[in-house]
Length: 271
Image (tube, rainbow, N blue to C red; front, side, top):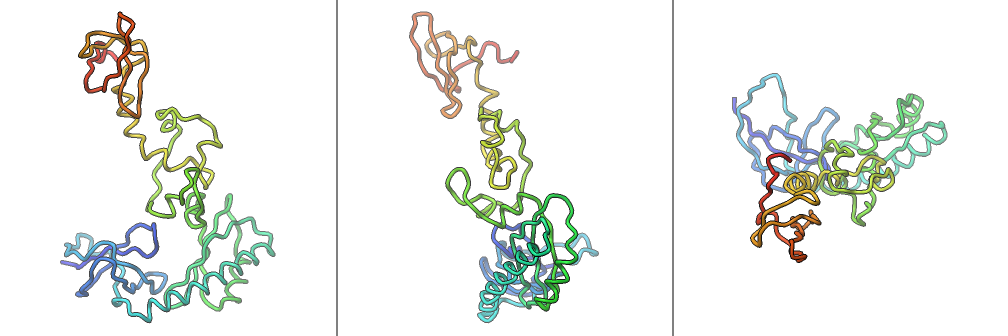
């Protein structure tokens, strides 16, 4: 069975959601209304429709309701104010109930039938009293969603150590595993303060250049290693990872810099 499937992004930096587009004529960046499990949502086309063979008949994709009209876009703008009020209310109520939780986001479905309150907390939190308070005050279905530290930072936003807006807020759509070995490979100072991001976890950017550093480090001769160069044999005294070059000392006390591609390692097979 063939299906017309379109890739939708409901909110910036969220993963793609695939939707059954039916026979709708859609193009990149078009806004659409989609029926989800939570209710109707406004999304934007991030991948144009494609005809795909359904290999899992039991898997039902969310259904496209319609191409968004101007009234849908205006409705979404109006809901932003409601979300701000819901966010303030949730924070105030959590404080009154002495709940140790960091509430970072409130999001209404397009039909305003449900609001999702997102929070972070250490361990499990009994939020049933808060759920009752919010349901009575907001007069709609309330969903409380607990997320991890990185998701909290993504929703809260902020500026990284580089001085730019957090990557998870602007363009990252998933969180890959990050380890201390990635910092060691790049010869960064190993300290909790220096390696932590806005979420308190290891910075995601440690992964961005990790593979490049690992490749260079594998091909970089050790200090003191004998190598062959276009000017003859010499001994490596400095390795320059960013430039992918080495400084070689010769028997006549001269020092020359060479790209890694222009030197040969005698001991490469043993390193």
